[in-house]
Amino acid sequence: MGGPAPSGNRGKGLTGPPALPEPSVLTRILFITATRLGDAVLSTGLLDHLLHRAPDPQVTVACGPVAAGLFERMPGLARLLVVEKRRYDRHWLSLWRACAGTRWDLAIDLRGSAVTLLLRARRRAIMRGGRRPGHRIAHLGGVLGLLPPPTPVVWTGPADERRAEALLPHGRTLVGLGPTANWTGKIWPADRFAALFRGLREAMPDAVPVVFAGPGAAEHALGQALIDRLPGAVDLRGRLTLAEVAACLRRCALYVGNDSGLMHLSAATGIPTLGLFGPSRASEYAPVGRRAGFVAAPGAEGEAPIGGLGVEEVAEAALALLARHPAR
Image (tube, rainbow, N blue to C red; front, top):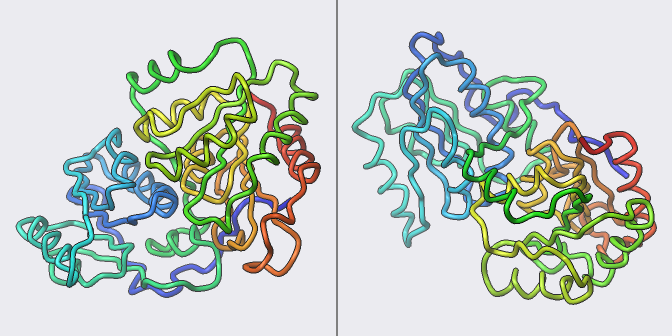
């Protein structure tokens, strides 16, 4: 079983890090972040750092449609710009038009585009695009020269918490399961998830499985394969906003899931989160959080088939994680 994400590489591959404006003049902030959910979750720590630094932040966040719900409850949010990819990169032109009328105190671009270079800004920080060694969280922290990098956070509101309370059973131990991912090579088989839960229930007799999945037919089908094997499971597939998903995750004693955006969201809530890795690289995308860990299939990183992960191995890692971080 692996541990938390590493944290090195200050400033690697960046155009900065910049010297931040004094808090008294750090008000208008532009934050261009990822299209993918997992990358966007990992970037929330940077925003949280800025929100605590600035006395009256007015933040404009630009992100992809899948990640937009992450920021709807964020304090200090002035505008949320949803960037939908268009032919010939015209989405960047649309973003520039939406931002060109403001003089920014700080413009951060985690997409490596040229947009912030064409805007009026006191300070700007641009993270180079493309893949490189080291954990993503370290690359993100380096944008502002933060070592160790700030850990991800999630923002929810009272309505989200009420929705979670209405959906999830009371008085029992909730075990979140994430059987989906964005490509098949990262997906641990549904029958093993089911066997894992039955094994965990031997240690937690009152455990209830809660199946999480995103919207769409593919996610629905992957979740159904697990629900069919776990009668009585709570089905939360595609029914909730991201803030409501986060509120539901917070009520779980444990989350076990494939390497996915939901895995990163779970880790950001602070609950014990175990990520399952096969051909994807835990050294780059292990879940980040105070109570997060991972288990990787045997073999060369980036090539190991996730089918090599056994049920007993995952159960042992999950119970060890719970032993170190008991449910609150």
